[in-house]
Structures are given as C-alpha cells and as structure tokens.
Image (cartoon, rainbow, N blue to C red; front, side, top):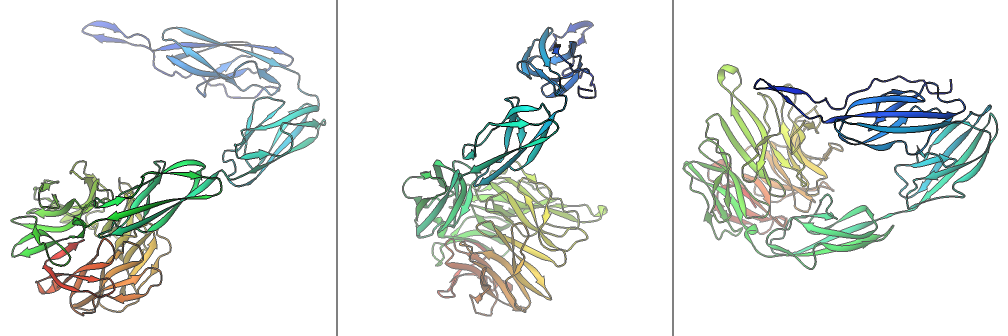
Length: 617
C-alpha cells in the first residue's frame, strides 16, 4: 500500500463552546469564543495516497481527511493557529506551505485548502545513506538538516548516519544546512549523487569546527585595613561566581566580542578603583583579563560583636579587637544570644527576648526590631545567620509538642526575608530529630546542615535555600556534623568520627572525596571554620576533658598548628575578616568567660578584650 497506515484520530475540541447561563430566571447567552476550521484537500497525479491524511492543529492531530475531500475541526479557539497535513505518502508532496497559519474567528468557519501532487514511485528504487563526521572545537551542538533534491530539510546529528529509502534510480543532489557559523563543510555542498536501482549510495559530509569562544581571567587585589573577605563577579549579568579578596577566577567558553565584567558584593568600607563594570574584548581561543583593585578603610568591620552575661541578663556588645571602644547595644530584661554581623557590617542579627525570637539591630545600637514576634510559648527561634547577600536570614524554629502527643519538640530550618517577611520552612525532620549546625553556601543557593532523622546516624545534608528534599552528603556508617562551606563554595568542612576520635574532615560540595584532615587523639573537637582565603580551617581541640586549645589545619597539606598553646579552656574561634587574627573565648567553663584575640601564627595575644562570649568578627 503506497500511503502510510495510521490511526485515525477523532476531532478533539480545543475550547468549550459558548454556553447559556441561567441568571435570575432569564438565560444569559455568552458570545462564542471558538470557531470552526474546515480543511479541504485535492490530490492529483498517479497513485494518490489511498488512505488520506491527518489534520494537525498547532502540532496536535485532529482527525483524518480524505485524499480529496473535506473535514472539519470544531471548537477551535479564536486567533491564529498552525494548520497542516501529516501522513503524506512518500510519493506525494503538499503544494505550498505545510503547515500554514490560519486565523480563526469566533462563531465563524475558516478554511484551509491543501493541494497534493503524487507521482508514480520508482519501479526499483535505491537508497541514500547520509553520514556526518564533525571535528574541531565547539562543534555544532544541535546538528544539521539534510535535503534531497532541494526538498524539505530533515534533522541529522553532528556525528551520525541515516538512510533514506525509496529513491528513484538516477541523478540526485544531497545538501547539508543548519551549519553553525564556526563550522565548515568540506567539498561540494550540496553534492550530486547517482542512485542505482536497488542499491545504496553513500554520501559523507565532513564538517570542521573552529573555536568560537575565549576566556576571561578576573583578578582581585585588595589592600588597606579591614579588607573584605571576598566578592562576586559576573559576565554580562550572568550567574555570579565567588572570588576571594586577593585571587583569580576564570570564566571559560565566553562568546567572542566585548563583554561586561562586574565586581559586586564589595563591603561598604571598600572602594573599587577605576571603572566597574569593565568592558573586556574577548578573542576566539584567547584569554582576556579583567583586574580589579580594591582599597578598604577602617570601619565597623574591625569591631567584634559578642554577648556579655551580667547575672540573669545577657546583652549584646561591640568592641574593638584591642579592647577599646566597648559599646552596649541592647538592654533586655532577658537574653541576647548568637549575634552575627550582616555582610555589609551595618546590622547585627541575634536571638533574644524572653521566649526566643529573632531580632536585628543597627551597628550603633539603634533600630532594634523584632523580626519574628513569636511570644506564643509554644515556639522559639534561634541561631540566625545572614545569607551571603544580606537579603535573607536562616534560623531554626523549635515547636513545642504537647506531652500527650508523645514527643516534646520539633526543630527545623527556616528562612525569612531580612525584614522578617515570608518565613519559609526548609526541612521536616520529624519529632525525634533536629537541625543543628548549619551554613549558607557562598552563592546563597544551598544550605548545609546537620540532622539526625529517626533511625539514622547524625549526618551532613544539603537542601535548596528555597526548600525541597534534602540530600545526605556524609556517609551513613559514622556520625558527622558541624558543616562549614569553603569561601569558594567547592568544599565543606565538618566533624566526623574516625574510630574512637572526632576529627576534622572535608568533602566536595557534592559529598564526594571525603578526606580526613586531622589525626589527633583526645576528648573532642568543635567549631571548624574556613579562613577567608580558604587555605586553613580553625577549630577547637580538647585533648582531655576541661582543657582545650585553638588549632588550625592546612586544607591542602593537613599540617596542624596549635595557635593558643595555653592548655586552658579556649573555645569558639572566629576569623578576623582579613584572616590574620582569631577571636576566641577563654574560660567559658569557669563561668567568667573572656574574649581574647590572637594572630593566626600564635603571636600578639590580646588576653582581655572584654568579658563575654559568642564572638562574631
């Protein structure tokens, strides 16, 4: 049978017809919103398609139409539609555009007439086997199209073969189109071929592609006091990438031409010299450069915020790292805890109040605002952390469950906007699990957190900062916790068991290449945190109960270094913004904790910056 065998699909209404509505006893006639499409076919020539064709509207089958005849499609929505014929036999060809655009008017009938010409198929046809072979840089990703004798193009991949049957014996042409501008077809295109009866002739197209992109290497040089700990850089407004304060980042596969490179995320006390964004000329196969010089002046970024316990009252303070300029910010008749500077150093977020709520306050102590306003007695919010761009706040919410329901509380991760609006729940851990240590990824898209779902060991998970299903990164055979992202977002530091001891580990951001960095016996470790340049991790190491020091470990060489060397009670280390110093708490277990500051190389100890704890620099 010369025509295609096919299923004949019934006409499918696109939009319901106008209806009459009863309103107050009277009928309200709604004007029609659809029309009718009438398709007419006329087929000429020898051996026409015996079983007719299929009508398509906007790419969807809408029933059969005879080879010569008429069929209608009802309830077509008003407006322009793409109408065509499919299922046309190989020896027949639709004259004119197929498909074509037809305008439908509500309540009216529009027509589309198709003329089809058929020829006798070859008595003993042959075949053409078409092969494409693409080499070189930046090959055409979406392939090409081939056409025989100038007919309708058919898709073909960049490195594939396809055979076209039922080709009449004799001379033909085969052409390749849709070739990208950086690619060239070797030899003649289109090219002549001679098809012998009953035989297959091969047509091979060799395509060579050259590079059409280059690279941009961005360099940052930051000087001055209190430098920023890193920035974001983007090309032509695309996805921003993290770059450290003194470092490089390379954008690959950048289209040739003039590109705009912008540095953002610069702290308020820092100034970018020259033009920003910079216009950079990218040449094919070459690496262009964009260099940014940033100068930072002294600002509130140099100050340390912390909590001081005066009897039953915990208040928020700031102080210079040498102990001068002590300033009390809050005056609660309750608690202030876990303060953290905003990325631009203009505000501090903290938990406070009698029932556990999230507050924000300006660096000078003004503008104190309760963001959560819980005060229900059944909920409390704790541990707020700013997103890298300062637009959102991550925190935990603990909900108290009535005792007659079994468990007593559930703790999960939430985010909210910096003004307290749009609180969003990120995790659902269950009544016997809690989201503990947690950290934003540098690009603000992911949250790493520790959790212990029912029936599993404590582990490190990640979840989208907009919510979703968490993914466990750390192995399930041992417990792991306290995740902290590296400044470039490529790795996560965490704590995990190694035998009977707790050690500092790192892994790639996808959970691969889990590497043990420390190998120290002793009682415990806590608070791993990357240095601003990503070269080291600071942590607390307690070789025995009641004695602990602040240590660092080199993330590449695994070399460990005892920074404090006091053998006392040293905890809660935090890096200075430039990574040169570390603030920590001495004597927390004694009930009279003191904030201390020391150089990262163990020199220059400032033993009594202020009484207090929970420092953030």
